[in-house]
Image (cartoon, rainbow, N blue to C red; front, top):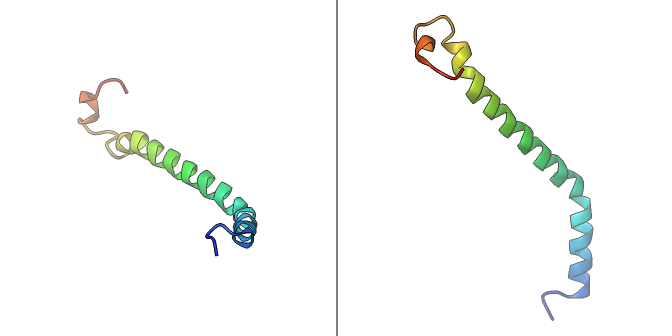
Length: 61
């Protein structure tokens, strides 16, 4: 019996088709999470430290 028998390949392709929607949605969700983290890291300190003298020392904002 070979590892890549016709039945195995057929079952693998069926499973890959079944999970295609999940995979697409997984990568989309991962991209949204990474963008959200980037926005929070960029905006977060400005909101938290707004009105303090620490923000006066930051340049390029």
